[in-house]
Image 1 (cartoon, rainbow, N blue to C red):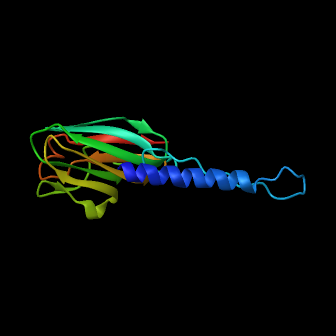
Image 2: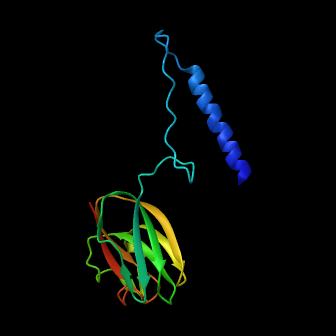
Length: 158
């Protein structure tokens, strides 16, 4: 960890020295030194346009925001229930209780499934990002019987 900080400091100093050494105040029409894009210190990655959404799964409900702006959405999902749950994102105009069900599970092949956070145990959290366009979505847990027990939430994306 210490060595990586030292290496980062040396690289940063080198970039600063190069920028100062290459700048031109002579008015000779030389192109200015390009700026270095802003980065976040924790990750070294450019800032993200991702929108974070927090959802809680319980036995047997899904709680979270009802609307959000379109874009790259980061679903942070916590399972506060005792049972294993999952979160499936479905683009649909169907009513929350009107999805096709066979043998206790929603028939995903008949739907526009955008993505899913696969099943995980109670007490744990999972995150994943999905690009959602404007429209209406249902978030469901598709573990057998869970959708029928009320594990569905509406999400409007504008």
